[in-house]
Image (cartoon, rainbow, N blue to C red; front, side, top):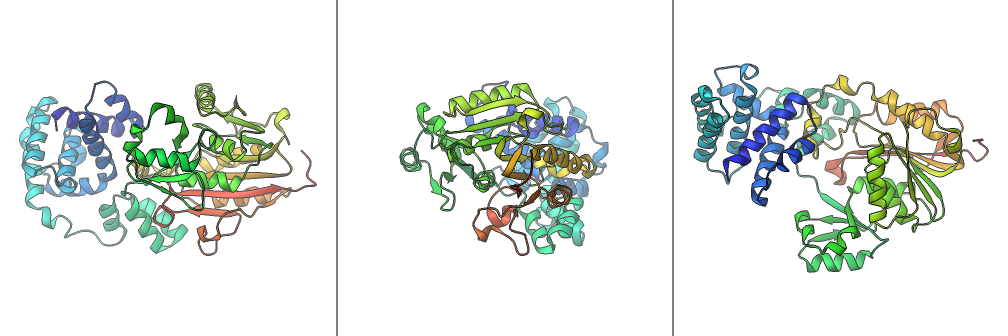
Length: 449
């Protein structure tokens, strides 16, 4: 692979770790600046995401073989070492001599000539010691954190919330590639027709029996083989999000609101449940996102959707109060359930999302005002943190006697032991989905608007 793929990975990593940007945005922006061959793009992406995923493990190994503390190294040199070390440990197809020599060349090319010998020495030492790198791992959580690159604070959170076994399973699953799910757009085709065309194009599919329209794709890159006219017959949507839509169960002719809608997957899926009959009000804080959502809806044949720009945590406008049959509130969250897709989330300071439950509760409280008497309210997040999930739902019920729990209309096999029927937590190792939480409520029939 050409050196510029490695250089792109190093440059993107430095930006993420220095500026705290979202990994997918940083890398996509960088890769758009050149006309890349597909294999070079894939190689750069593998290095970039792999280093982020395995950063704790890589730093443990590098620290044990470096005469200089890692925090004292130039950021570029540190990222070059991480990229080189990742190739040595996790990329069997890259010969060790090539990984080392390319790292040394890159050090010089990125104006760090003085460190070229140091990079060479550290990576060669790592390569020589490869068999014994983890012989002296610390015991307990520190050792598990190094082995899985899952910070100790997350291990502690998940142990307290879900127990030792599930905590370990979650940590060990963080670096697994997430399964690829799509939603067949039944407003434009049938599941049978889509699968027939896709399979003819060499796409390996598996329909999910309990969720019609939900399809797992084994080779998602092959979706590019579909004819352009078929591109609006599906969209990417994790099974967890599709389960959320099934739990909401909107019906044709109803009024539905999606208060934190962008990028719009749940609104599109709701429109299919509704046979494109009724009304969907999709809200977001940013006008640009609403514009994109409207264009996306039109592209996918959804004519019942309109958008509104508003802060969902602000007082609910009078014209929206008591107007909707079903309202879904997929609140902003810490994202601890989607670490496999956004690996940098695991390293966030826990204090950075300590205030989220209050914001989530404010959104849920104001969203509840939109629900008509006898209507459905649904709260969800893509995180695995009881403070953002069960605690918010419990507080809402305690402070809103006009709402009662709603049994989620889903297969009972999805629930873990002891979880109430109006709440569902989805775990990646157990359900094969993103980590996700759903809670359902009904507004009492005698309640006023």
